[in-house]
Amino acid sequence: MSGNIDFTQGKPSRAILRFFFPMLATGMLQQFYSFADTAIVGRGLGDNALAAVGNMGSLCFLIIGFSMGLANGFSVLIAQRYGEKNFSELRRTMSAMVRLAAMITGILTILSIAFLYPVLKLMQTDKSIIGDSLTYGYILFGGLSSTIFYNMSAGILRSLGDSKTPLRAIVVSSLLNITMDSFFILVLHTGVWGAAAATVVSQIISGTVCLQKLRSIDFLKKQDGDFKPDGALYGQLMKNGVPMALMNSITAIGCMAVQYYVNGLGVAFTSAYSACSKYINMFMQPACTAGFAMSAYTGQNFGAKRFDRIGEGLKVCLFIALTAYAVLGTVMTFFPEWLASRLLSGREQITYAAEFLPICGAMLFAVDMLFVFRNAVQGMGFPLVPMISGIAEMVLRIGTISLLIGQTGFKATAYAEICAWTGALVLNASAYKIIFAREKEANADDMSYLSCMPERDRSGEHPDGLSVKY
Image (cartoon, rainbow, N blue to C red; front, side, top):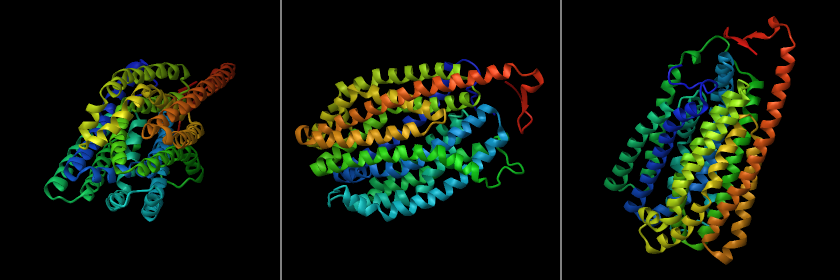
C-alpha cells in the first residue's frame, strides 16, 4: 500500500496536507496546460479561434462534467470500502465501476457527437466561429473515452489516498500537450483541431500512467469471484454516481445559458468570457483540491465510523480554501487588466474582462467554501444534496443574468456566478451540519448497543481475514 494515505489514522492536518499538495500540483498543472493551450490558440490563431474554443467550454463541461461526476460518485464507495479495510468488496466495486464506465462512455460519445451542431446553434454561436467550434468539439467528444479513462483511474487512486500518481501522470501529459499544441498550431498551422487532438492524446497517456499504478497494488489484484456481475452493486454505484453526474451537468446547463446571453452580445464578449472562465477555473483550483481531499478523507472516515475526525478534517480544508481566497481573490480584484492582457490581445476584449474579474474576485470565498462543504456531504454518501444545489445554481445563474443583462451588460455574467455560488454554499453547508449531526448520533447509538453485547460478539471478520473491533 506504498504511496496510499490512510485518512483514518494519524493527525488529520498532516494526512490532508500530504494528500493536498501533490493533488494541488496536479490541478495547477492541468490549469497550466489549459492556459498554455488557450494562449497558443489565441496568439497563434487569433481571438476568433479563442472564442470558438472558449465557446465549447460549457458544452464540454456538460458532457465531461457528467463523466467526472460519475467517477467522483463511484470513488466515494471505493474510499468507504478502503476505510472499512474490506478489500474483497473494494475489488468487486472497482470491477463494477469499470463495466459501468465503459457502457456510459459509449452512450455519451454517440449523444455528444449527434447533438453538437444543434446545441451550438441553440447557444447563438456566431457563424464566424461555429466551424471551428464544431471541429474542436467533434475531436474532443470522439476521444471522450480517453478523458473518462483518466478520470476513473485517477478517482480510484485518490480514494485510496494516492495523490502522487495522478501528479506524475499530469506532469507527463502536460509536457506532451504543450509540445504537441505548439507543434501543430505554430509549426504545422493545423488550426483548432491540433489543440483538440493534443488534448485527447495527453489524456490517454495520463490514464495509462494511473492504470499502471493500480495494477501494482497488491490488494487490487484479481481473486476468484471479484469480477462477477452484480446488479445490486451496479445499482449502488449508480445511486451514488448519477446524482453527482447530474449535478455537474445541471450546473453546465446554467453555464450554457450564460454563454447564450454572452454570445448574443457579440464575438468580442465571447472571447472576454472565455478568458475570464480560464482565470476563475485556475484561481478556484486550491479550494477545489481541498474539496477533493475532503471527499476522500470523509469517505474513508465515514466508512470507519470516525466522525470525530471528519469534523477536524473539515476545519483543515476550510482553512486551506480561505487562505487561497485571501491570496487569489486579491489578485483578481486588484489586477484584472493585467490578467486579461495575458490571454487577450484586443483592447475591447481586455476591457470587458477587466470588468468581470474584480467582481468575482471579491466573492471567490463563496465558491471556495462550497467545494469543501459539498465534497464533505458527498463523502458521507449523500449525493442528492449536491444535485439539488446544482439545480439551485442553474436557476440562480439563469435568473440573474436574464434579469440583469439588460441593465448591467457583460457584468451580469459576474453577478450570475456570485448568486449561484452563494445559494449553493448555503444549501450544502446547512445540509452538512444536519447530516453530520444525525449520522454521528446514530453511530453513537450503535456503539452504545454494541457495548452491551458480550465481548465475543463484538468482533467480526472481513472477507480478507481482517479482524475488526467495534
